[in-house]
Amino acid sequence: PREGNRYDGIYKVVKYYPEYGQSGYKVWRYLLRRDDPTPAPWTKEGKARIASLGLEMQFPDSYEHSTKTKDAKPKAKGKKVSKAKRPREDDDDIEEETKKIKISYSLAEDVMKAISADEVNVKLWTSLKELTSSGQKAFLDKVEEDFTCVCCMSLVYQPVTTPCSHNICQDCIKRSFEASITSCPSCRNELGASFDFQINENLTNALLLLFPGYTANH
Image 1 (spheres, rainbow, N blue to C red):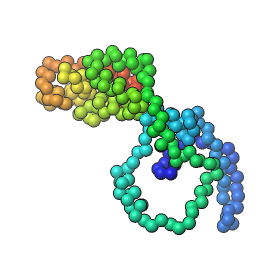
Image 2 (tube, one colour):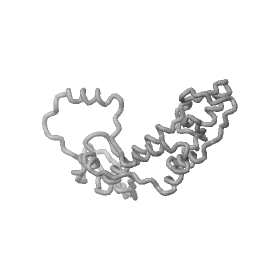
Image 3 (tube, helix red, strand yellow):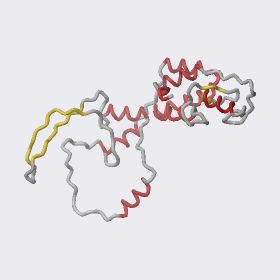
Image 4 (spheres, rainbow, N blue to C red):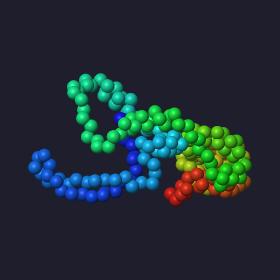
């Protein structure tokens, strides 16, 4: 693309061979061919996939400063010759094209069933499901944000849902009680010394379907 870097997929080496370069030294040439079942990002199918996932260009913190510095530099004279052999006229327009394609993200039946079972978080899930129209990435990012444990700042593991509707990792809230703090870590609502640290299995099932294997690091 004109700006940034893009993951194009998996490529395999078809052949490689030695050749003498312009300086007289032997160099190796490699012929690569794309070998990826995922549609290439410059194709119509690839653009539709980018839109459905809600993928956007990610910028580093220093990007704005870098662009100002770049714009301040005088432009070099003459035309820059492209070395690309494959015509990529569509590459620069991918971002613009994906903005035009609006494909909402549909939750799988088993995910919907798991979400519906988590009745104690029904208000949260109702709000989150409205984001499916913005694509998969927007939806999952918001799910991760809303179900982040306020203590460890990670996606809740073995979540305990409090009467005040906050979700905390079981280990995190237990450590809080061990320190004689018996209030909700999120809103400070008093839970009582006899609070039951019961794991919300329905929430666990829903999160595992949305983020497979996320519990592996625990």
